[in-house]
Image (tube, rainbow, N blue to C red; front, top):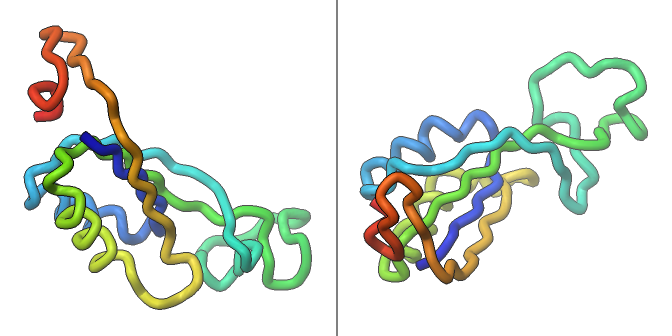
Length: 121
């Protein structure tokens, strides 16, 4: 089993969620997060009013709002899920996000005590 951690643009959440649902992975955790990459948070990426003092220098923010998805999947589905997330979120612009693939040793469904792959679905 693997955990896919995807950090994406907030405006891509709906399309990403729909694609994962179609692949058979409707269960996920989505968290609003803040971060920035090497470009130090280019301000043109967001469409909100910036309060005074949050900018480090002109057109650069301390942090940019993003969404972090966490999805546990079967090993056999990793390439398909990665491909779907990339297809939806890739704009070839700074800020498209990152995807991390991590091993998962075990899962336990608290309600039923099911473990492993039986606890994914």
